[in-house]
Amino acid sequence: MSSRAAIRSPERRVDLLQVERLPDRSAMARAAGRAIGDELRRRLAGQAQVRMILAAAPSQADTLDELVGQDGIDWGRVTAFHMDEYIGLPAGSPQRFVSWLDRHVFSRLPFGAVHRIVPEPDAGRAASAYAGLLAAAPIDIVCLGIGVNGHLAFNDPPVADFRDPADVKIVTLDPECRQQQVDDDCFANLDAVPLQAITLTIPRLMRGDRLFCVVPGKAKRDAVRRALSGPISTTCPASILRTHAACTLYLDPQSDPDA
Image 1 (tube, rainbow, N blue to C red):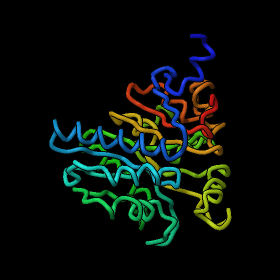
Image 2 (image 1 turned 60 degrees about the horizontal axis):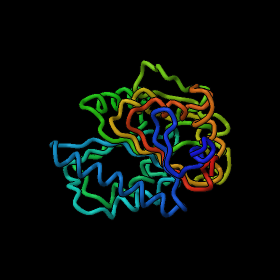
Image 3 (image 1 turned 45 degrees about the horizontal axis):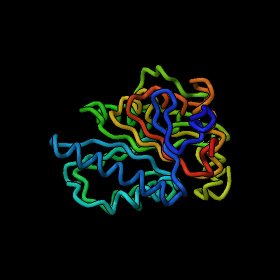
Image 4 (image 1 turned 120 degrees about the vertical axis):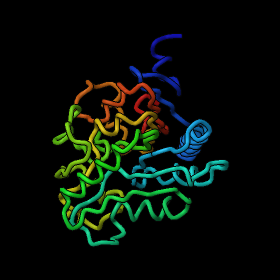
């Protein structure tokens, strides 16, 4: 097989990262959701509890719908975390990431525990407390996406640190990240998007034992290209996924730069 044919294969490996391109967005969501379900069942067969981190974004909705429909998972032995939250939105705001996760997954499954990031009244204290909850035991599974600027969680290029000493921190969101929230129809305009957020850091995410990264749509195509073929650098934070020993990146033809 020629090197060109290998690059265009729907399944390939880039450094340590396993990349899978599915025929369309629906097939991508089914494949990712079933793989996450299989991993949960496998782990629950051999350990008492599973701890997982979930991303909140429209790009993740189809995958979570597939996961919610999976059979044979004892959700009562699963503890859920989320990976970021805005600072400054009113409590109960539908734009809060935890509100999104409540609608799409937390209210639909009988988790044993759900740990929510609540920034009020002191965001710094909330970040420290959440770091403590995460550190109480290993994280088994992380379900994440990639932002249009290559971010993981809210680790935008200006604030991403591959050697970050913190597990959870307060960040200022860059303009491209904030514009994505408008483009995703989460906010009416840029002025409505908060300037700051609490986020899990990249080292904290990368310590997850098994990572599933789901990235549909043409808006993410350039970020995926930079993540897969550019340098491993905080200029594209998602490039660090190429160093994880057990991460699968799921793409559709619109997001895959080699399609």
